[in-house]
Image (tube, rainbow, N blue to C red; front, side, top):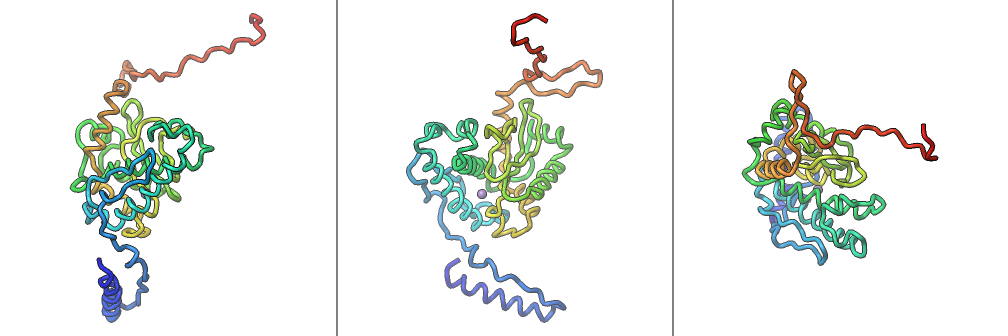
Length: 292
Ligand code: MN
């Protein structure tokens, strides 16, 4: 949209509104926001590069408009260029001279000291956004297949019920944060949230398992198009989920993980193939060396 169109658009909008007034019993006050704010700059993801440093900007493999009509081009452009890019640049700065400088992104999360608040925020943001953008794609959505679908049916009852729970959890998240589909080491699935830019792998959060899918529940991710309609945003997300990628994550994980968990049978003869069984509690040894 060029500048002229931007000027014309509010005028047209107000004409439309004033025409409608004739037929409305109540005059609805249409908020004057954010016609201009949603202008898409018309740039390309490939034009952007992170400032010099250890971390590069994730290369978005599609154009900003490619997810329309579900996720709009303007939101995608703002999200990628005005949120992810600055986070990458900030991360490149805050790791300089720290123990994190030589680490990849995920090891940073796993070795994170929460007193390093800037690293926590920026490393989390970059990891979470990369994961998010990788998890959405044009001509995607629908339902997963194979063992991921089997696991969803087993652990949520049905795909529809999984979507409902994921959206509901997202809507209920207070403040800014992220919704995640996680797998435990047996391939069992659950939905969690993390606040702010925390990633599930961060040492100190006490979250186990591996992430398969995430949804950005910061306002910048949805407000231009969906305003306060978080549920609509969360539901629309499922029209752009890149299930091929999520299946790939689940497959890669389950191949490296312990044998699949099996529910104990009705006769109770089967037990999970686990190496995580709690060790028998040992009696503390007397410290003074005396015998009991
Ligand atoms: Mn975001």
